[in-house]
Image 1: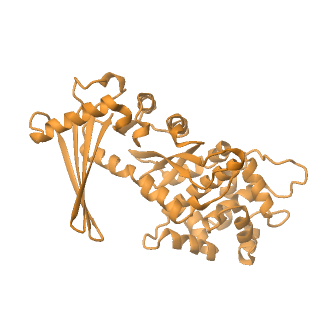
Image 2 (image 1 turned 90 degrees about the vertical axis):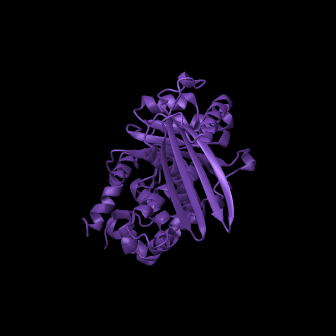
Image 3 (image 1 turned 30 degrees about the vertical axis):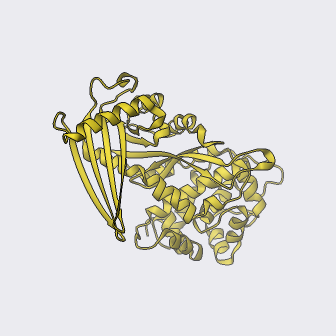
Length: 383
């Protein structure tokens, strides 16, 4: 075992020791760090809210395990304690406490790939208070499979203002940042470059003139197979359950006469991805054009473009299928946002577990059934 379970639990608590307790000092019976550590463990073990956290923590074997390693001066907290803490904790402050823990998981890499995308918690709307469903914009480290930051907005249309905010929460130096078409904005591109990073941004209808220019450029050069311009090419073919998916990547230096070129800080290359899928003999094509601050390196471009889908397929889809996030009816905004962050952190921890043959859903069940497996996930050790 790497270290001891007790020291590992204490190390988790240390990340939250400087977090200001938002509760009144009157009748305060439970330590804030105990409440938070229990919440982290419970979400990993299958809990979905304050009531489930309390039920899990009070089960005899779990309660005995927690009492061995946490202070718990007045025993296991009730569901109302978890709810009060999650209601009153400022999500921004809560998130900052995870940063050093996340850094220890991410490690150091020469190049990092950061994908930014939004997700709506569909059943979090509150008609009584005229509130729409909560929308979260997140930063996903595609190689490490960890959520590094998130910002909440009330509407999907507010993503453009949320993206600069979430970029402020992460270090983009030496990173390649990918965003969907809504984030293809000159100010966002400049912010990434000013932070020492690179961007790969798709061009679609929200950048009408740019989309037309880039699309026409590639259409013209595809006709003669890029005979008049230097191009880097790369192809991949994947087969899954009878489905064949081929991707052709093309990358060229940005032409000097591209309309609006000077508006995009650091713009160096244009990229094209042609995705061909064959399912049951039926073939479909999808084409995506991108602008990028990367130098011409088609394999790096391909990795960034392909990796962006990880936030949708690996993160958002799993949150809905394994954590049932879209089914959550939590209405309180702070509770909803703090639980969303706990789910994303729990997902990251489960992704770090070395057993790749067991599904995430099964790993989560195992964490609920057996504290020794929960210890493996939390501390990369066994009891």
